Length: 129
Picture 1 (tube, rainbow, N blue to C red):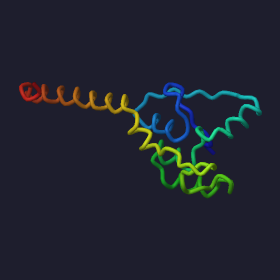
Picture 2: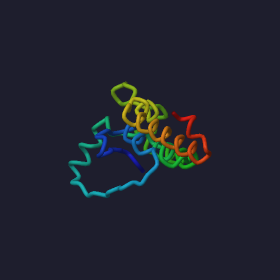
Picture 3: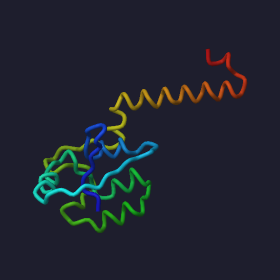
Picture 4: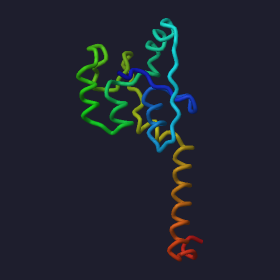
């Protein structure tokens, strides 16, 4: 059951890391082996925690899997809200995505380029100028 998320390129963890992953690939994932003490420390790092079901919802778009994951989660992890243990609300994947100005700018530029290419293909070159 996914418990933690961390994105090495953006150096963000938790729901924000899932937001960084919820874009078209390609992806490169790496499985690493860590000492037990390190894993225990990571589980105490609230910035990396993801609520049960969130990875299934955000990355796979699978509500059924997300619900089954929540049902099978240990009781200490079966929160339905995204509040951390210290009472602070963690950033949702959508909020984290919208806060990433570089990513939004890149999407806008990609959309502009695709619009230019379509306009050219349809003979509407003068519309884009």
